[in-house]
Length: 163
Image (cartoon, rainbow, N blue to C red):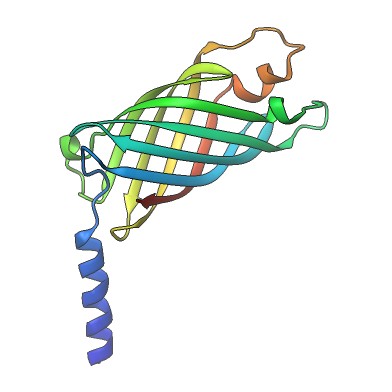
C-alpha cells in the first residue's frame, strides 16, 4: 500500500511541475508522423520563445509514403518552414500543462497557417498534434509533384520535448 501511495504522489508531483509554454527563452522540439491525402511522412519542429506568448521556429517534413502515381525525388519529398506561433496557454488557462498555438509558416513549398496543441506529462515530455493548411500555394501547376504533396491540409501527431 505504501508503494502505491508513493507512486501516485510521484506521478502527481511530476504532472504538477510540467508547463507547456514558459515564455521567453523556452525551447521545444517535436517529432511526429505527418498525414495527408497523397503522402505520409515524418515531421520535426523546433520552437524558441521570444516573449510571454510568442515563439518562432523551424519545421521540416519528409514524405515517405507517396501515392504510387506520383514519381517524387528527394527535393519533392522534403520541405523546410520558418514559423511564427502565438502560444495561448496562459491566456486560455485550461491547464498549465496544455498549450494551444495558432501560427503562420513560410516554406519552400507554400505559405500557410497551422493550429497546434501540446500537453506535457512531465517537465520534459509531452505529446502534440498540429493541423496545417496552405494559404498561398507554391505552384498551381498540377504536373508539379509539389502541388500534390505540400499544397493540401496536413495533420501531425507525435512527441514534444522541452530543451
